[in-house]
Length: 263
Image 1 (cartoon, rainbow, N blue to C red):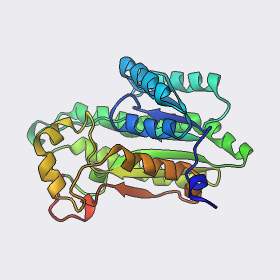
Image 2: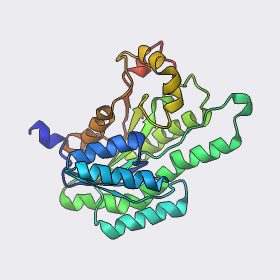
Image 3: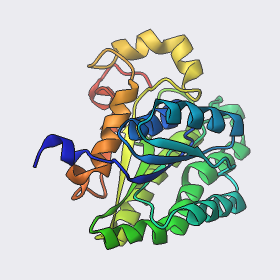
């Protein structure tokens, strides 16, 4: 078995939520570059359309935008129905859409928990629930459907920043992933990437102010690059990742083992 076949995603149908920019765009680009047909969805319709055109032009795969506010239950249903109209099978679901909120403990709003737990956890469950039928059809091709949830090291170890709802929601996502993995095998795998710092809109404030400090506190002395998260997704989506399920995999440059990391 050669290395190329272990990571091969050519011809696979993939949905990446939050795929219009940031980490989602990095992930979508990795799949398109390797010949997959990738659907991206996020609330920002313009970003979705622009990214889909750019990635399709780069090829050799294809990128198609299905914009939608995935914090809304009905919008999740609409995106699923749109995908069902176009495809008979979904090989990979990447639940990447998410939000964060930072504010001092004394003024931290109740609404932050409602917003983040809904988008970062509840709607991941909603989309997964609605897409299990399409993912299950991969078995008819002799394969296994894949779900990759984008978590965070902040859901593993308490962060230094006051992002209470975010860290709580990511810890919940990690446990949800394990629970789903125990129920959906053997025809669907469920894994989570616990990401460290990557360049995205969510991380903009932190990186603008603390990038050098963050990097110096990590064993690898840099923040994440697109290929770091892209390669992990390709592995979990290819033949080489077929026997991996229920895992929380840190993609973090060693942040979790660095005693000086201030995240």
